[in-house]
Image (cartoon, rainbow, N blue to C red; front, top):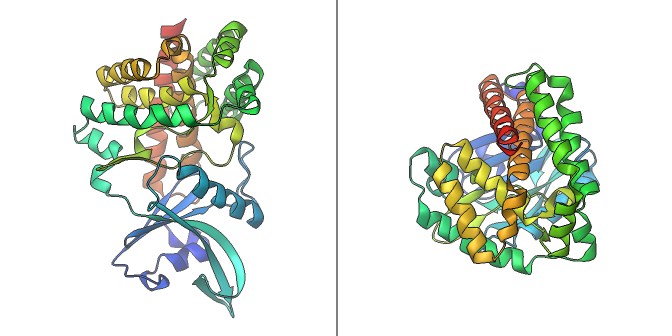
Length: 340
């Protein structure tokens, strides 16, 4: 990572003495929309000042608002001691400081650092995830969806018009990158044509809306956002777009099912869906699953691709994300083929 490419305030936050608590080491993780700074027992998440169409963090007031939303929404699936507070980075007389007086440079979210050895994506790599873990996740998710908002405004996000808007904008955003790793013209066309064909079946979407299956969900339910500690902790939901978060429950659980498939855990993916349907009584979920699996795989491909081309991302991360993007696009195409 080239520190000179980082914003000045992030360079400041890479120093252990920038924090009012003990810090033995500082580590930075970047995504296409965030700087995530791991400092001692805490994590500080800062939103990049970007406007990508589907999110807009371009101004300081917007970043402050979405930090507050992040705290509020993530506390639904996390213990109270995980999402801690809104923090301000200030600058006075040319010196940065966390909190205190001075010009507000940016706002971030302060979190407790979760046990890395219990992160689901790490456990998957180590072969440490089994049916008992899936049962625990289902037990956490079913009551969450049952009590989540399902107002008329939320339900409208499950309409063909709104779902189509979310799905088809992915193709618009990725079209300039056809020819990149894994995204050939043939792959792009096949997935887009499958999505458009499925969206023509309005009856399925209307039925899900009538059944009350559209909820204020998590929106980003994959293994990297799940910690299998003593209590299952599901964090880092979508806070920046109500349209992308309020969706069919099938779309939410399809994300994790797809992620298990991505890691070659097809049996666990099938078990997860079966257990979820049994516990929730939502047998109609299967009618939407292939469509949403494909959508979620394509979204992950897009996110990895956007991260790979970010000039502020180091070469190793960029190469890894480009490789991941290719695998996700291939998986999305496989779902389109299975569902034809």
